[in-house]
Each structure stands twice: as C-alpha cells, then as structure tokens.
Image 1 (cartoon, rainbow, N blue to C red):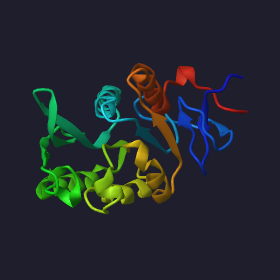
Image 2 (cartoon, one colour; image 1 turned 45 degrees about the horizontal axis):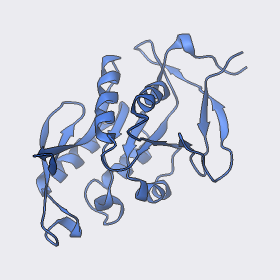
Image 3 (cartoon, rainbow, N blue to C red; image 1 turned 120 degrees about the horizontal axis):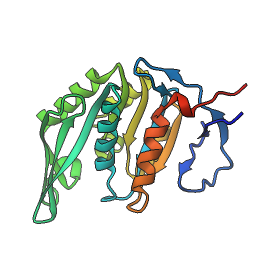
Length: 226
C-alpha cells in the first residue's frame, strides 16, 4: 500500500529542503481527519516558515491563506505587510487574516529611536490590535502568525501572546514565520510538533505546494498505514 509520509523529528525538527545535522528523522504516515469541506486535514503541527529577509515569507503566507480560504477552511491570525517608497521598505502594517482589516504597525526609525533599540518604531495601539486578533483567532482550522521576531523572542514584548495561543493547539495547523537566527529560540519555547520549512527565492513554488499539501490532503491522494 502506498503511504503519504510526513518527515517529523520531535526533538529536533527536520528542515524541508535541507539536510539536518541531527540525525535521520522518524517518519509517520498522515493520520488525517476528514473535515466538513471534503478534504483531509493532517494532525496538528506547527509549520515554522523561515528564510532570509526578502525571500517572500509574508507573500507566501498570504498566498497560502487565500488558497485555504478557497477550500472553505477557517484561516485566522496576523500578517505583517511591508510598505515601500521608492523601492525602500519604510514601514509595516498588521492585517487580520480572517477579516482582511489592515492598520499601520511600525515606521522606520533613526538609530536609537526605535522600539527596544530596533530599527522600527512600533505603534502601541497596533501591537495591541495584533494581540487581540491572535487571542480571538482560535479555534480555527489554520492559524497564521507572521511574524515572531526580536521584539517577541528577544525582548519579550509585541505579540508574545502568540506563544500561548500556539501552546493551546486549538487549531489544526499553524504556520509561523520566524527568521533563521531565532528558530532555535522559538523551538525551545514551544512544546509542540514542529516542522521547519526553509524558503528561498528559488524554491517559492515548491514550498507553496508543500505547505498546501501538508495542511490539506485530498482523500483521493491519501492512504493510511495498515
């Protein structure tokens, strides 16, 4: 019998598209649940999306959210959308994944004038709005958190509440964006099955397909183990 496999290592999650130096991960068959939409949804897992700045992580999250909504799944959470002027990133907005509502989140700041010594000045009301969105996001089919950065994982501010929401696992899947330098920090804080997905400019199409397949499996393409 053919089996659709998921690569999982609970102690040290494997990296999709890279070899991990921590030994061969175990393999488990999808033990998926049939949702009311007619699609199989794989068991709960955090998909940790990482990659260098500018590789398209937020754009990919938005594409994934749109595709899953088209399949009648409830997708919720936050997106951090960039704002540009003359080709330069000058600010960021926070968008509610479920409603599409968007407000200004941060502006580029002079050296030493940013929030927590960062290069961005965050708006306190917008950060609070993001916290409210995250707390109200679950239950849902897919939770998206874009992103958890230094403000949360180093300075303990911003959307740190996302870690509590992720721990409740009141969702079927979570897609979380974390920059490469903070991946180990995140994994040490969240006690949940996590798969690291590394995005590059070259593998965008492959990773999009990989994420959609990981979250939603058609019953015509899924077999279970005997």
